[in-house]
Amino acid sequence: MAASIAKKNFSCQWHIILYLYVVVLLLVSIPVPLQGEEAEEASCKSDKDESCGCAATSRDKATYSKPVEGEGGAETPKFDKDAARTVKSSATRRTNQMVFVRGGEFTMGTDAVKFPQDGEGPARRVRVDSFHADVYEVSNAEFDIFVREAGYVTEAEKFGDSFVLENLISEKVKSEITQAVAGAPWWLPVKGADWRHPEGLDSDIINRMDHPVVHVSWNDAVAYCTWAGKRLPTEAEWEYASRGGLENRLYPWGNNPMPKGEHRMNIWQGKFPEVNTEEDGYVSTAPVTSYKPNKFGLYNTAGNVWEWVSDWLSVRHTQELQVNPKGPASSATNDKVKKGGSYMCHEDYCYRYRNAARSQNTPDSSASNLGFRCFADKLPQGVEEVKL
Image (cartoon, rainbow, N blue to C red; front, side, top):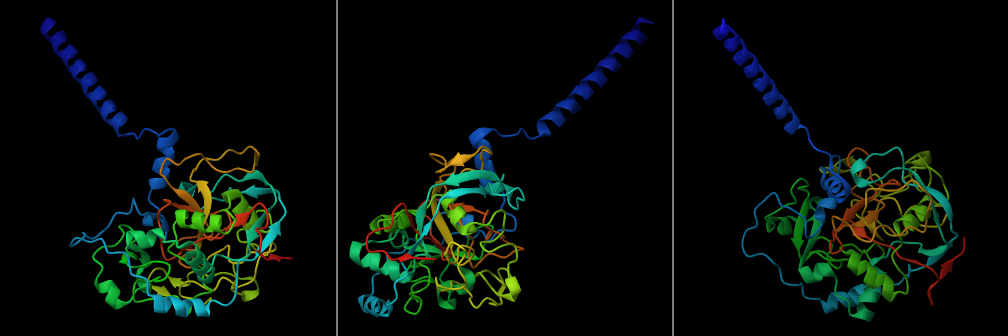
């Protein structure tokens, strides 16, 4: 009898131990939610599905799908003075005009979030003071004037390379590349790619002086704006200006991407990244004067090139009314915000040419679809103000 009871007790204890073991296994398999800065950083590092991979081109974070061969590290490309004289002679039209934008209150962000990891939402009320905004993105011609007068050398020139979309690169240049960005293999690090040579050393901007300058880092953009007596806009100012006084609209002109069948922005048509059908007229950048301006008089705040803003990245936002927000004091991921999307964006792949959309890169990063425009509290001396 005692032996039978002991046997039953042992069997019961064994079942209890087995049950507890299973419970422990289940508990350790449940992911623990991250909190605070860890959550923010994990969100920013999450897989960017339906992305053109622009955020993956951060200079100090990019990982590659192919091993690096050889010693690497190209020398800074030598400046061709003869080519420079040719460029200078073609830079005839100034596009540094600004427009006065009266401050006000608007809805920033969106509740119809497409990319939660980007921090697009929630929709929130923001008030900004009046400012002046560049009518156009900074062009190659305007940047050329800055470089000549200030003797400035961009970070891409100092590093000796920058990121370029594979489709734009010549076969000769492509044959010398031994690596691609992991997860976005259409992005290639091209030696000698910079603002004067957008697709590498065998390219130039002689016939693209009215196109937006690219391969400029956040630091380069700040240097230019400071020289011009201007500054980079805050993200709130940029979005307020891009919306052009319209509330809760996808694009600077409304919700229809092609009003009356008319192209209003330079984005990707076709199948990304294999085929761009160029239905909007451009395979890469378009002149900064292209398409129609919004109601505030700004051109190309949707598509063409990404535009740097001054804010450090945060993906968490308060829903309380904010007045002249400038973003966080720092970023857990060392990223600055960029807005507007680019010629590489497609609705089915990187739907970030919406007013509320955003992305990010580190301040020293550059790419063939990344530019900027400047804002100012007061109209700088010698700058023409466009009257609407």
